[in-house]
Amino acid sequence: MQKKMLAVMLIMAMLVTGLTGTKSAVAANSVKRNTKFTTVAEMQAKLNTADKTTWSPVYLTEVENTYWTFTNQNNLGGTGISLDMAKNCYRNLEMLLDNGYTMDYATLSAYCNEYLGKKNGQPDAFYNVLTGCLGNPYLLNRPAATVTATTYNGRDYSKVFDASYYLASNPDLAGSIGNNPAELLRHFVEVGVNEGRAGNASFNVATYAATVDAGVMASMLQSASYKTLGAGAAAPVGKYSYSYANYYGKYLGHYTISAAADTTSAASTAGTASSGSTASGSIDPSQITDIDTQGPDGAEDSAPAIPKSVVGTYTSNSSRSVYTNEAVSSAQANLRPIAVMMPTDKAAQPSYGISKADILYEIMEEGGISRQMAIIPNWQGMSRIGNLRSCRLYYIYAAKEWDPILIHFGGVAYMKGVINGADMNNLSGTYEYGVGGKAPGAGYFFRTSDRSAPHNAYISASGIQKAAMQQGYSLNLRAGYYNPVHFQFASGVNDLSQYSNAVSAPTIDLSAVYPYSKSKLTYNAADGKYYKYIHGGPQKDAINGQQISFANVIVQNTKWQTMDKKGYLGFSMIDSTEDGYYFTKGKAIHIHWTKTGDYSPTRYYDDSGREIQMNTGKTYIAVAQKGKYGGP
Image 1 (cartoon, rainbow, N blue to C red):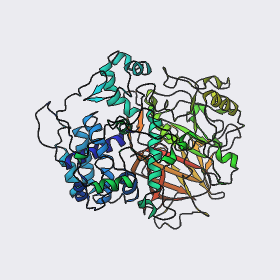
Image 2: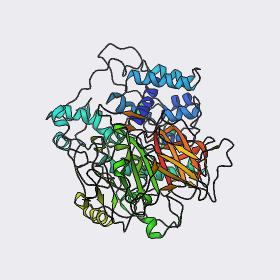
Image 3: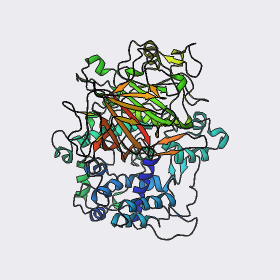
Image 4: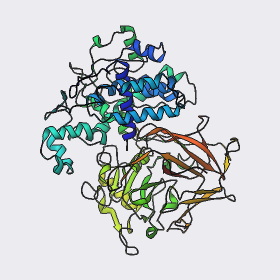
């Protein structure tokens, strides 16, 4: 799911390597670790900024959360894109170049060619830096990492990794690796960390990441850079990193360097610390129940503090639904939604409760068929929800921004690690990976005799409540995960008349995106809604017989890839470079979308960079494989 983001971060890492001059030719199988850090002064010169708090030799919180968030992302080749690509570079320099080796020459070369195409074949300074990185010794003739039972390229992982635990928790490795501690550690660093697999029973990287992120967000909200934006400014990214590798590196002290490594003055270091970019992670004491400390080696203590914002319950005082902008009671506003996996199979129609979805996603899966995920906030009292089908990894990333309880009937191995994270609350009617794993709350699912398996699996609201109690899941929104701001809703009716380039869109034909279900929506001017069709007929709810309809329709073009020979797909649900279309009131405009982290909301912008104003009502989101949808 996050392979695209990982690739981008690796490019960032290589950017710094190129800037520091480590691109000299080396003999095959002879690579020295790059230990040189670019200084603050050098980065100021490279990006033409005199801000001494911008370039810490260790962390780039100011870049990641201020410049990258608030600069113009369409400014290809300018300072904006340079800062965008440089975020995380110091953190990734050692972890992702020295460890893992997941970036190769061909991938970077292809990216350089793509970038040059966007520049109409005209190279610029940034392109020259990228192509210079192609001479990086870490890309050519790379030897295998040196690994022992507890160390990877000399780095000690014993605080976060136990070989016996890792093998027992990952039965898929029994045949390929077996009881080989060194090779199990290699797999953990090179594969498992990025997939979210746990290395031992005592350290949960998702919980630790939430701790660090809470401190980053608190620091950014108080920063002078953010305050100068004034009232109504978009919230900062508030995220330390987009890769779990960097949280492990921070926790283990991989990024602590001596003062001698930086040639800048103490004043610039002090400036960085005052702005919240300290080596200890900038945790605000008011946000945590126990302050993190560092040992004499610079590594942080083994019991990371948990922010109050993560362990508590979020209390919403809003009288408007975050999903639809419709009036809502306080109790309803604070209830966690459910995210229900529902099929598009013709034999499975109609589904029970799908008309209750305030947000409905549809995404392709293997076998040339799509699947749906219904975000249902008002689910209590329902006696039959489903039928239910298995989940895929990319749906989890779509679901997380709503802080739901995920309801599904199994899944695939690519979900492993993520679905078992401490932050995830899910109920599954069978083993999550189809062949093994966990099935939380399975005893509360049921099958009916009116349909044949696999189209006859359901759960009730009562079953969800009991299963949630059994699993210890909160039914109320969780502080630290829930974000109260998602869509921007219009104060009245937005008919897109303010856009000179808006086009008429009485029909939204998605048959090229979903060739099996042939999903289509048609506009009804009488009530201002789009009505959904599937398999050539109205898509209805089995409970009330009503055809489902939406005030807003979004087609979200998304990078994708085929993961294996079975045809399982991967989608880059966290991205900031893709486009799409927004449909409402029988018209459509071209848009861009961005999602910066697991729990960050997906935001949609028009071509002028303004966040689109949605109409009150339900929303259907068609996540389209990039290249499949040509527009209205």
